[in-house]
Image (cartoon, rainbow, N blue to C red; front, side, top):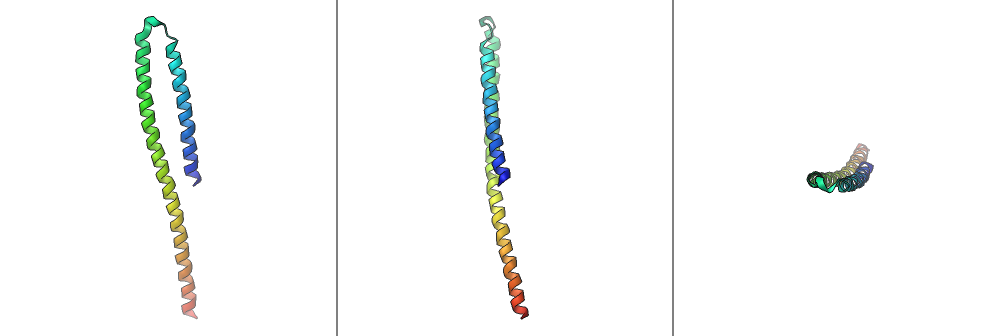
Length: 98
């Protein structure tokens, strides 16, 4: 389960870094002179596209991480079940041999 937990933590850190960089860029665009508003508008439009893409990518990564976490739990349950079956079979063989 540690892989899934670290994936969620990684995604959370990545989102915070993106948000900080986004705000910094937006503030930087706000410092551009009014006579270059076309540049500011174009830059903010590109930031909007980047933000949308990042949100979609983050959502997909989170979904994959959740599915991986569920798969890890299921795998562990199957291992325990397999061990129990093997132990039962071993005990049955010992019983039959007596």
